[in-house]
Amino acid sequence: MVSHALLDLFSPHDGGASNAQIQPGPRLDATEAPPPMIQNIDGLLNEAERLGCQIILDGTQPVIRGNGAAPPPSLLAMLKENRAAIIARLAERAALTESLSDSITPEHSGIRKDATTGKLHLFGNPSPAWLKKQGWEWNDRQRRFVAPFPFDRGDPLPRFMIGGGPALPPDYPEIIFDPQSKGAA
Image 1 (cartoon, helix red, strand yellow):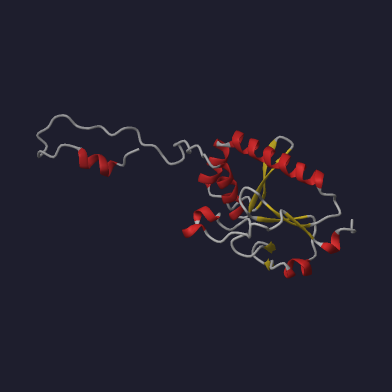
Image 2 (image 1 turned 135 degrees about the vertical axis):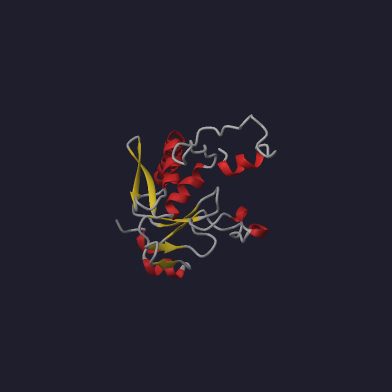
């Protein structure tokens, strides 16, 4: 799509002696242009989470939970265009979570490290005092406990940081259980 001002730049300027006029093509509004296909579905889902929404699967349908008015129309168009890939990714995440939850009994809660991103996630219902001892802080805006920078799920990945960013120690465990919750239901 080229604006009329740019088309005018490329038209012949010989004082109007040219009989051939360049006719501009049909004008396309931003709503008519198809949204681009996104290669990074996780980035699209993270952008929705950053805006205060969470996309989950309700059966086989993706559903936006949270502030549904926050995403701009361009993001909603990209979500609709990439619907099949989003469903596949959410189903993959659900299968991964289910396989992890098979090894963890419901009475356990604590901190889990995502092996692919190195980010820390909470599972179960760990006690706030234990989380504060682990270095986590309550964030009023997100209404949840957040891990120390850059290990929270909302922080950028180390590959997007200059110099690669800090990393967890190599001997950091995959799962840390809250000792108070092992016997609780």
